[in-house]
Image 1: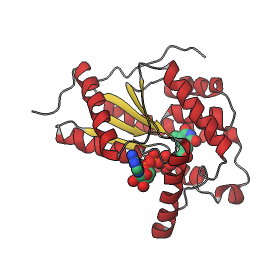
Image 2: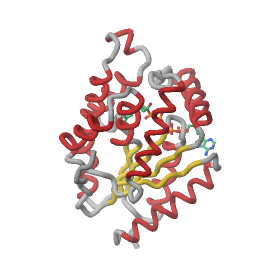
Image 3: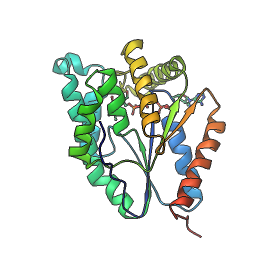
Image 4: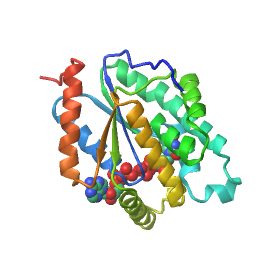
Length: 236
Ligand code: ADP
Ligand code: TYD
């Protein structure tokens, strides 16, 4: 589906992190945030779903593996609509004000996740997702998307062991998606590659199994280049 995209017209820079569960997004987002703050940038960081009080409620419904038993099987279309309800709220409460204020906004997942997981994983199709993106997000695209794509098996192994650790330590259960089968995740992976080919100016892909530190350095180089191109400098 081809649509005019809207770029943030504001003073800040909108950067999203994408990839499979366990690909290292949260780790790299935190490290990038620390590095940019040390350079004097003002940074706003959030995740989707989540990042607002409403979003946190939506997150607990969508990620808790007990939800399908408690609420009845969640329809794929309901799942998609809830992802966009969360996104609408965080755009209004966090992302747009941060950009207007000249901040670097770092978001752990955005509409590419809906296209990959609901569009391809749940087989709802990209057109439906992109139509909602137009209607709900005014088609706002990130300035830059960091797509982390280690091999599928590596990402899932890391995500499942992290979730086991969290459920033992803090009793949280966020494993509803990780319980999906390998075919689901293969479709998600392929869709991410398609998005990267289609939106090659926006999406920078990091494949392979590099160390946390080596990937961090590559990401920082790309981001510093984009900040300079956008004329954004940190505090003196
Ligand atoms: P995501 O947010 O994409 O689900 P996380 O950043 O939470 O991924 O990482 C999942 C797990 O994998 C964590 O335990 C993290 O320490 C580990 N991890 C992240 N990046 C790497 C890497 N490049 N090599 C090895 N382990 C990693
Ligand atoms: P999260 O813990 O934030 O990601 P990760 O496991 O990579 O650290 O979990 C978010 C889950 O929600 C993840 O499995 C992907 C899924 N998701 C969608 O299916 N569609 C979406 O639009 C978004 C934002 C997330």
